[in-house]
Amino acid sequence: MRFVNLGFDHHQEPQHEREEMRMVVITNKTGSMCVCYSQPACANHQEITYTIVLVHRGCSKTFSVALDGTPSPCSTDLLPLFIPIGYYVVVYLAGHFLHCINTRQQELLCHSLFLSGVDAELGVLGSDSVGLSLPESSLLDLHTGRMFTVDLNPSFLMDLLHCSHSRPDAQRLAALHCLLLYMGPNAPLELKIIDWICDNVMPFDNFDQIQEFILASLYRIIYKKCLSLDEVLPYSSVFEKKKVPDGLVQVPGVTCATELHAEPVFKGKARSLQGYWEELQWSTEKIKYFEAVPNPRYRTSQSLPDWTKLLTTLKSENKKSSNYLRHIEENTKK
Image (cartoon, rainbow, N blue to C red):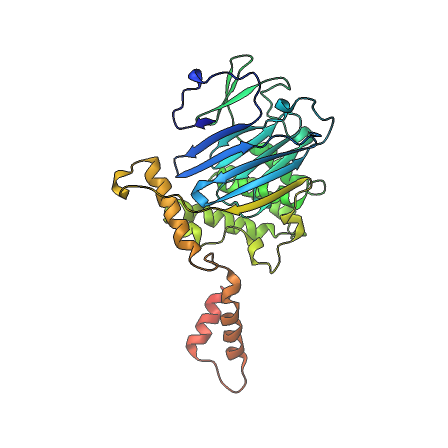
């Protein structure tokens, strides 16, 4: 087990000639904790399974990915690398795939970016390199001794958006949310996204890019300014649908299973916890509260019956609308 960002001394770590399993603990100053581990590869090495335990969310996500190409004869070659980048956890298996898992919006696969083939390259590591995750999104190449800082490339993400015919909707939606939420606020970048929306005004098959731009931008602002409102405000329009489209729920070659866990228990009084541990406790306390409320996240469809009733009253021939109702209608139109 390796602890990332918790001050573990990697120089004192014993070297193992053969590693059948990899486990890391990743923390973030915003109060998140993720326990990431890969399970032993299947006998034919055609599939790999890894689990992300979201301690701050009280659940875990287990992903199984079908591997393309020639299977490796050695199981140690199928150990993915876990890299923390902000609130994303990047799972990287050289020559196979790169999975940017969103630990803040973890409900659907379409809010996490999955890349395979030529897209799934870090660029700094060769095919025979051995990497080690370090704090502050750093990566150490154990063969060359070089250290790199890993981050998401906005130009590449914009290219994903522009490839409208060759990219699945789930991939474009994940790239859009990454650009708006993780990399924002960035005025030049937002202008590029607006230009892309203007070139693609008609909604895609599985999501409306205009609604996603508005909701994601507002969510980013609220998350920084209003404590805990991020748990009740919508961040994506896909939840407004009666049924989430299969194109957003399913990613080819990837399956996901969710398991709920009991919330972590902190011994001692809250005032004795400081810094990161205080933030983590606050995150888990929020989960306990919102789990007790059915459907806590606001949906615009909830106000639709009241709006329909208001319109019916305004259009009624038997009853003239009052000035109050007229003002409501005029303000709404504005």
